[in-house]
Length: 391
Ligand code: FAD
Ligand code: DHB
Image (tube, rainbow, N blue to C red; front, side, top):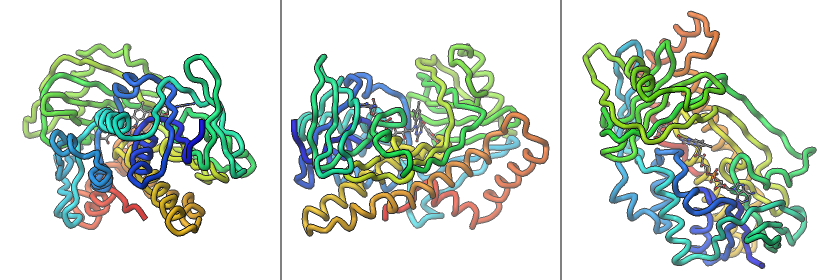
């Protein structure tokens, strides 16, 4: 098989890239190791930055998002039983975010790709990228019990943190920057209308909690739990009791309970692989970088990377100049590091680490008070949350 751009992975990065290339008249083949149902059901991110919303619309993939997505103009910070609302449009000159789940983004992009785009092969596992430093890179893959080769002009590794693409970059050219956190998030989906109409980020001495949503009738909630916690070790009642404690306010706000339909634990990690390009292999999304989820940057970063690649390849096709492709890694990394910083700041401000001292706790509260009391500090949060510009 032969194509211009071989894309490994049909998460948000790979699917959107295939769509952007299709719109630019560039052909591609997407290889995805899992089946379609798995990709469409995997519960992950829920918040789209303004820039991501704009990109999906421009790509012709925004119709259902505009119908069913929920525009959010702010978030609430909750600490010491107090509540502080951060108003995005007022602080950022009109920007907002959209609550529309990653599962739905993937469903929309898969439907478009199967209807209008190039091949999208499920249960096709990439085994290795070969010849990345030549003009004829290849992806070796297994599909329907047979090994095959995809010959490409370019390969884009959109295969997430556990993928194979990154391994094709020689170790001596690679620098990895990493931090793990001694806690994770226990996430649940519950069939109950969200108890607040905006997201609530709560800092409590017992740990962080987040109230989010998937629709007007489905809540998404998270609890900070110790690293290595098994989701099943928490009963539904224990989860609701703990959420109630961490969200408690002095004004009598109430958390509505409902049936929990899914439970899972997400580990927390910061990770950046530099460079994001080696020869004709480009890395995008979680294949190149991970942020801890506080602040919801993961999916949005993946979108920024593939927009940058599609733009660079289109420029090369139109002008013959590889200037933007050569700048790909540096261009993406500027935005990646801003998101790493933002996610780290949000995480360390809101999660009491095991072994934290009373001094550490006071500093977290002082950081929250600073946001609540200073327009400059609050604007910094609002700008970060609604998203950093694509270069
Ligand atoms: P992925 O979505 O990981 O997609 C990669 C795809 O490549 C997968 O479909 C995988 O099956 C496929 N693949 C892997 N290896 C191969 C191979 N060898 N051959 C072919 N295909 C392969 N972000 C938030 O903002 N908020 C959240 O709440 C949140 N929760 C998360 C929970 C979990 C458990 C994880 C892992 C991530 C979470 N994230 C969250 C991050 C966000 O979901 C990711 O940043 C986003 O999915 C990145 O998209 P991607 O396309 O780069 O990678
Ligand atoms: C969600 C996840 C996040 O990491 C976040 O900061 C906000 C919302 C969510 O899954 O809804």
